[in-house]
Length: 417
Image (tube, rainbow, N blue to C red; front, side, top):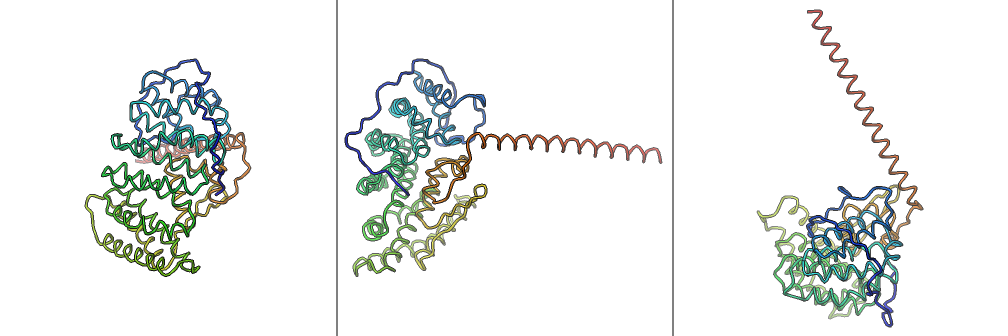
């Protein structure tokens, strides 16, 4: 995917207080680990402009009470998932950055996690722009400290490393920066907290998906292979899946480099050792039955293990097709599988809308966006709503007629008797 180069010198972080003085109170409770992705209970009218909505949300994020700030953050997360708003975020970048920074530094862990969600979603919305690299520069230090801070809540550490990884993935085209973040994620594998392990394994997987096959096969496979194999024993399904996908990516890269004769004798031997260990481990795990896991989770894990094993044995890689309107998006290979999985986790139910309208996803997965304006999109949606109402009325009318015919038939039968 195209990235903006990491020209980080001389950038000014937009952290000065924004000129927003009004104060409106938003009251709601929010769970940060399971953000509601749809637009149910949305407090704004359909004709409310995005500019007014953002202004109101920023006002809420400036409230004194943490619960009020968290409620506004939750609404912002919903908005950024449901719509593609690169211009709106860019136009309010100074206010956005200042508000998010205050919330991330808040004392309440729920507020911090939700602010990280909003920051990551802003990056998915803005894509490969200089503003996104400004966000990385602004929040890199804070997020790195939070990810490494063992005194922080596990959910905070998970949100910090995942947000840092997605900002780097989208905005930074610098191998050394990527490798540095991979080291941070790898160091977090020492934790026993499932939330920390989930965040670290997810971040490491996404970051590895941006590197070249030679780097992955010769440098990272020997280093990451052993700790990733240990993560396959985790009781957390997401940790297992993340570790497995990364191992699949490393195996795919090693196969490509080996087929191209780019590995020397020692490197070739190291790759064989790692693949043998992986095959042995997967064989053990396939035969292990865990009563604590749901049937769907077991099936998902075993299917993933079979896919990884096929990559290690014969070089085959996962292939998936996603249809959006009349466009087919091809997800081929482990790198794209990892990136698509991460996009789905961030965007939730909004993934379909973003696939239709987000230039960043178009660039990552190499497909063309249809030229569909917001007015046309809204008209299409209104047509569907209208047609749905027509269908409901028609069904009710048919039901009434059927009921009348049945009643009439019963009356005739009574008269005959």
